[in-house]
Length: 199
Image 1: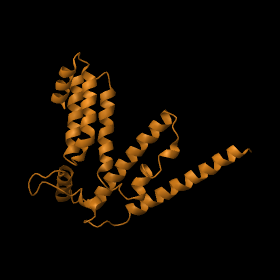
Image 2 (image 1 turned 45 degrees about the vertical axis):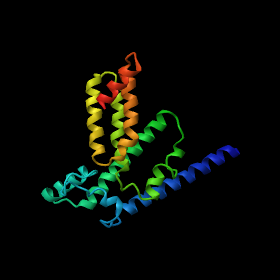
Image 3 (image 1 turned 180 degrees about the vertical axis):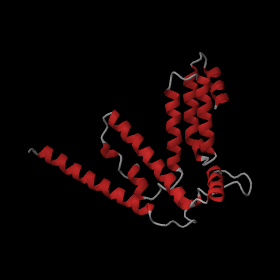
Image 4 (image 1 turned 90 degrees about the vertical axis):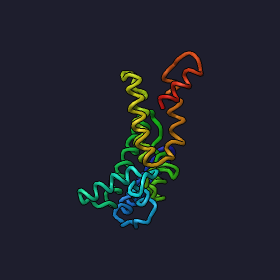
């Protein structure tokens, strides 16, 4: 066995150990009780009972289910966040494998591993990805009429903006450019105006 194979096997072992450590930390956090004052939980509880408040839609939905179906709010939030994390992880693993990128990158601190190590998997951030990924998927579907695509993309965008307005700052410029590209009308001004109107 040459030195390169030994190094690759050592890297695989370290990668596996790190992945196991991340999974342990994730499930440890999942079963650790959270304080309702913690940012991860409290941000989900903002609702419209005191009037229209930004970020309040998901809190209003949670409040409705808690009142009418007697759900445990903390566990519901954790399950939503865990599902969002699993969906985002599945999407990126699938895309990395499809494009033959190294999976070593994914658990590193700046991405999926960072969400676990810093504990921000129990936040709304990963929901952005869960709504933005279908937006990009819809945009790339050429067999769907343009106006139908625009409608569903806007519905998804409105839903997530009503949960956290930061989505507007990083996603709306991207959506504007996608719409601009979709129209493909000669003339910069007409494409710009149509993109703005449909956003």
